Amino acid sequence: MVNGRLLHLSKNWTVGMDYSGFLNRPHTDGTGNDTIKDSQTLMVDSLINTTSEDHSKVHSNGLNLHSVMQLDTLGGIFSMDIDYFGYSRKMDRNFQAQNTYANFKPIPGGYSSANSKGTRDLELYSAKVDVITPLKWVYLSYGGKLHFSRTQYDNKYFNTTKGTAVEDKKQSNAFDYVENMQALYFSGKKNIVDHWTVKLGLRMENTQTQGTSITLNQTHKNNYMEFFPTAYVLYDPSDNHSFSLHYGRRLSRPRFSHLNPFKVYDTPHRYRQGKPKLKFSLAFILYI
Image (cartoon, rainbow, N blue to C red; front, side, top):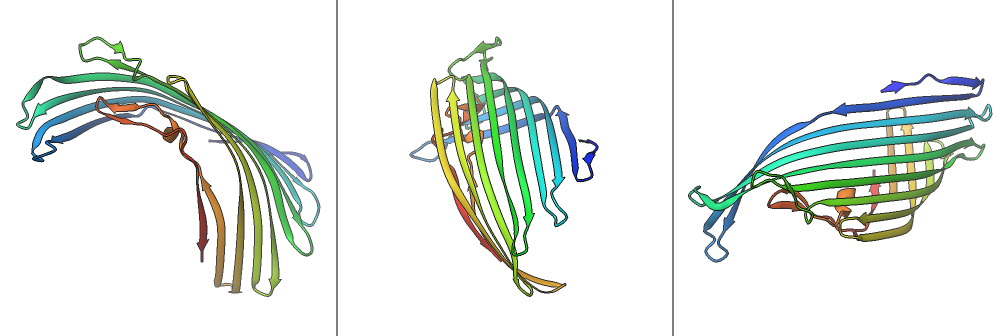
């Protein structure tokens, strides 16, 4: 990570830049054993032994531009952040599977192998503005945020059982996911009486998503707006003791892999498949 120097444009105005990035080449080996039983007798019918080898190249770049301006001598502050994050992962996976009888003898024609190669690219842009306004009767903070992200996944599946790599287009997969979000928020904090502090806030988020399975020629869109109130009460009887009560409403969005409708194979016999119509989840939080 590289922390850029702050540039003082004036006595009350500073700007700066930060950069972060990494490069990694992870390598993992895996084994798996599956048991197949007779549905009537529950006796072991056969076994599937799988080995895999993964090679990946992962790199990312992050850039932040920020500006802070002091508005007055009372502590008023105007700040702005612009962020970029880019992530790329190239994957190369080989796996082999051998079917055997219960006595571990190979089943004729029970060997299979495959190679899966793909890329996953993510680009994220965001910008936000925050304002702090201390007033005599309340401490106000408010602002807004814009967020845009796009994830592209492209994976090719090759059957290598006969020694020659042959692409299986029915198991190859391309998926594109776009998410836009706009948010406005504000909060107010006030010391109501000695040792008691109350803070109330509200955040509004408007979100648009679009997932496109290029392979299946399917597109799913989702638009929603939600409000997230927060409340906070603090009792501070001494320097060494304090008691607080928090209430909030939170949203959890499904991950990219949970929305991809195509079957993504980890081995010739195991795959993961998402649901493009999967919705977000809401939670109410209350803790002391």
